[in-house]
Image (tube, rainbow, N blue to C red; front, side):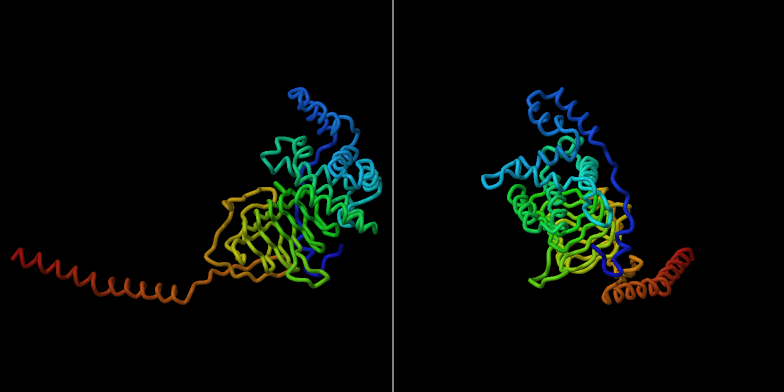
Length: 345
């Protein structure tokens, strides 16, 4: 999917998450199996019996998706076609769903302290599983199978309350923490190494068709229940506070909070999405930032803006200080000298 002029810069910087092989996942699963025999059937059927990540994720998702109308075998047959050699998720990174899936898994391990490795998010985290279901749906959508892609989206929404349109383009290494209530619209674009908390919405502002959803750069952190609406641009390494409603484009490396969202400072880290600074501690706060966003350079020029009343008060205080220095202090000094002199005489 091509980017409109001026957007390429916001996608230019991102450090990819560390990768891991399927063998790493298998080794970890064997360790879990030795420590907890109750999980033996689960671990064996979901991980140890499969030679590749593709085989394992197909089995895992098809078991979840199975219903009275579509069997596990039917879902498995459909999903397997997506993981065939030579099929890529999109034309930007030219990566297969299998490679992206392992990178997504590492992103969860690295950023979510509850993960405690690779096995737990693979088996239990619905945000991760919903994202892999979207990867499948997107490839089906790209290959002209739009009706079945929408069916995958529908089942994903029913199972995990995560609603991602198959046409949305999501970069490598997205963390969807908790997952519940996440909505990503049809023309949305999300860069690499971003992190979303539960309840995040990338939506439109009305019923108009066409390009109508947000475009997010790399390394972005979006707090829980934050809403980003319309065909706007969110620059890389930006933090959006929980509960914020973003209606206008934001430049790179800033922090925005509130309803409507306003820039309150700029990020001091190099990857907001990886740092997971949800309490907004690693932020350089300002009284007010007046941004002049150059889309080509992705830059921000800062000015500290003072209210006219604040300026008037500062001027009055300065005048009072000058009067005290010139008139009052010398008067009291002279009075004190004469008093001491008179007492001496």
